[in-house]
Length: 171
Ligand SMILES: [Zn+2]
Ligand SMILES: [Zn+2]
Image (cartoon, rainbow, N blue to C red; front, side, top):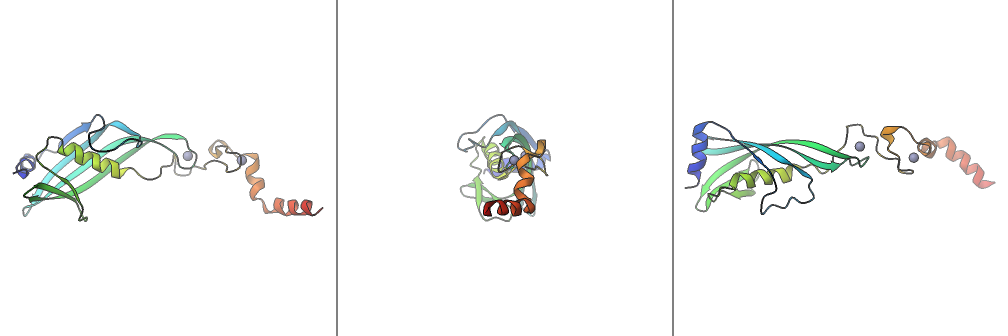
């Protein structure tokens, strides 16, 4: 049975360490800006015959700051616990607190790599900032406000100025 291999790992008490050096077949990663290698570490343990696999991943990806559009490289570190159940089809992996089956072991060599990549894909945040307090671009002139204020910024939001402008309009 496929779980036998898992149990071997569990008994060894050694985490399984490895890295992905490139994209893997069957999981779409185009456009995610993934940087390789992607490092992972998996530990397996069992309590009362309930098997858990803890997967930690570590990688960087290229993206643009969602405020100033600067190109940045963002680090991601993520840990996911999987519950493992044995069925006729093989060992099935469920993300903890989720009913959704993630992957069936099927005694494939590539199993762990696929599990790692599926976690990588779901770990990338929707948005990234070059820094916490990025000031972004001026909506009027497009200047990167991290490099200093522009001339249009204050005048656009200065209420006194708009009042004056109203006066001129009436003339
Ligand atoms: Zn930024
Ligand atoms: Zn401006």
